[in-house]
Image 1: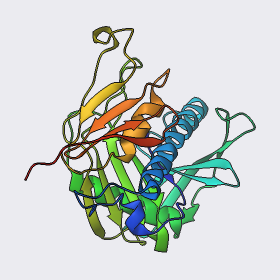
Image 2 (image 1 turned 45 degrees about the vertical axis):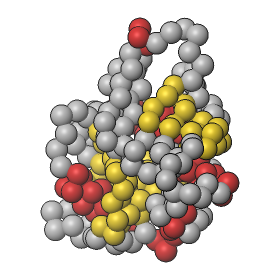
Image 3 (image 1 turned 60 degrees about the vertical axis):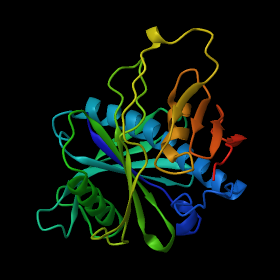
Length: 267
């Protein structure tokens, strides 16, 4: 499976992009905070779809040439452009071999081979550096992982690492991390563990009458970007209830988030 990343412009302050890490326990999150989480989750879902179909298109064109390469995608004028290549050994250039461009239909990509020696020393280079930096910090895993990069304000980068889907019937949730990386991709500014344990519920263990999924979240008092992503990737989508120390949230099938209940506090 190709490892892919997406580069997206998120027009919001870094503090909002970080999902209100310092959100006080006795104060409910604002609608703006919840909307920011929804927006990032939706963009991750778009990434998943674009990376999936672009990778399929490139593999059909020449599967062996792009093995082991990174793909970094950017949505330009409403269409996805997915670039495949490798970071040079000294980390000063991103060497591009193929590009895939989204066509009129969202799942169709046109592929072209780039001239030998084509290199990028700007944004794609910075994103590739950020990916390598985050993956090195994350360490090894005993299962496949996906990586995604979102462009934050001030040019900083948000790098996501989350478990890849290995069974079409099962949508994993958990074991995911988000990094805030400097604009040049050389320094980790913040690391956020979104969930710890990876949950993989088999459809055979779920009742047909289930109206929502459910999990507890102990790392913060907010739902995470990947909670929204998890809901949107299911077919058909199923709402997810997220219980934190002080709130019960529901992530709806359109990715919006609402507070279902405020937990009673004890002194």
